[in-house]
Length: 235
Image (cartoon, rainbow, N blue to C red; front, side, top):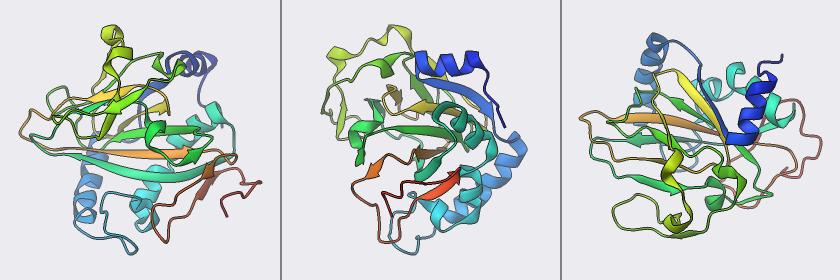
């Protein structure tokens, strides 16, 4: 089923992102958030990272990550054959540090690094609690990454000398909304200056030509979420 029109596809090509779109209502996501809170207090069966790849051991996260509202839009952009590689919860508690400007592919063991990400707002994502910010068109060139300064979360960040901050888009989202962006789109989030936490779920999807060079845990597998994996290079 085709969801994106030609203007949306062109926006993704030229700006590197799309959205926000609605995945579910605020009330539905608020109910889901209660279940996610319980999940994040448990360990997965094969490793101890509670925020990582929970789609592999919890049906609710699998359903969120593979919702047709997300998958069908990704298929319009990347073709029918799609593989779910990784999911991550980003839990930004009150007072949490800034996540610096960066391009995702710098951190990932993939070759070639072709990834489309969905970022789903579980809680309200606001300027005050450190919502996502994106620089449109930044995916059109590779930004050198350097060692980070102590006041941010990541060990490496985009080199500020190569980043133009004149065209930032601030993406406030209600619970149940999501955006799409690619592996080179520069994005960042400020510290959480509010008194409440902010949870987002990132869904990382690849195409069958991409080789995973390093797996996250003993039971980490790829899930075909659309079409077929005719190449099977990660089996």
